[in-house]
Amino acid sequence: MRMKRTLSLTLGLILLAFTLPAGLAAETAETAPAPGPFDGLTAVLGGATLNAQADVYWGYNANNPASGVTAVQPFESHTNSFGLNLVQFQLDKPVSLESPLGFRSTLAFGDAMTVVQNTAVLDGLISSTQYLKEGYFSYMAPIGSGLQFDVGKWVTPAGFEVIETSGNWLYSRGVVFYNAIPFYHFGVRASYTLNDKWSFNGYASNGWNNVESNFGGPLIGGTERSGKTGGFSVHYTPTQQIGLHLNYLTGPQAFDASMNDWMNLVDLVVTIDPTSKLSIAGEYDFGNYRLQGSPDTNYTAAAAFAKYQIDPKWAFAGRYEYINNHGGFLLLTPHYQTFTGSLERKLAGHLITRLEYRHDIASEAFFEKGSGGLVSQEDTVKLGAVLVLGD
Image (cartoon, rainbow, N blue to C red; front, side):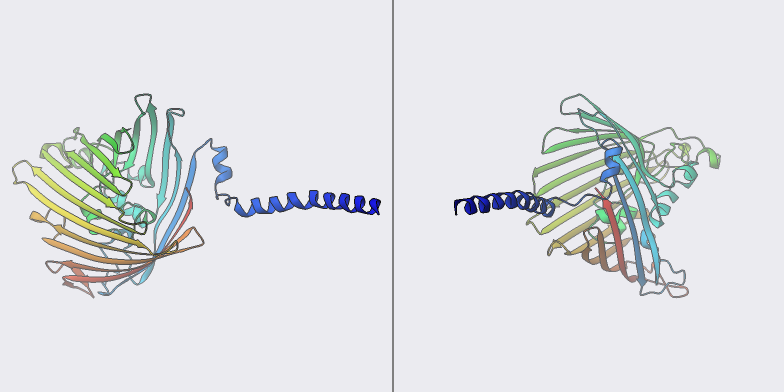
């Protein structure tokens, strides 16, 4: 009898030795995070991260313009048609005091990049830079918490919305994004984070939306422009729920230096998260343009945003914009408003879909309707899908 008990105990311990590791392994497999799509490549690249995204949409314009184009939404301008907004690949190596050298290289294609680069057709580098959305190298100097320098091409610090749909709350970019602020700059930028509340940026660039400072001067027989656009940004986050971002840009913008012009832009963005589900933001822009021999031209632009995260998969967002276009500097209409609503649904963790309705109002007949007429209002619908892979 004692031998039988000893044999049973021995068999039980052997069985436990085989089954316990298997159970622990199964539990570990269930709780461990799924590997990212580029984890293997990241290891090979020595800490650099890779991000890729593709953005396609279907658009409808109730005015049925004969041109087939919704002009005030150039990133997603096709109407009654499918369109490619953006395909992007970004390689990013962040810097730190321990690893002071880094870089960012972002290649992008599609309607968005066509619009962004069409602003620089006269700078003579459109053929070589039209697909480079951002490209700069970074160095962090061992000063205080770290003073970072970036040299190259980067997107503008101004504004709440960005070029990539995935970084915005709604599918379309607003009229303020397209008209009141630049897209990008080329030059040098310095960044310093004082603490968890204050950070600062200072930069000098070749202007708005161009790589070369002459921006067409020699090409049109003018005088090469040598002046630079300077600016600074101040970011203040008094709490985790509130952020204040002030940007100031100033410098010449004309094709020909002999025009003796000057542009100033003040941009203020405020973000507030009242609850874990509700986020709101506001943007205000004031622009002043001075041209020798002409009176100053000013404009003001404002936008309000709200987003409610219903659950991890569903969200609703809204946007209101207003532009007071003093002197016709931005648009061929004195006043402009937009009302936009967007419903978001995330699928499979990486796919973002948005259904959007937008109503635009101009103070004058401004929008194309049918085969030739102009009207003061426009209604559009967008159905977009954005696939995002990587960090």
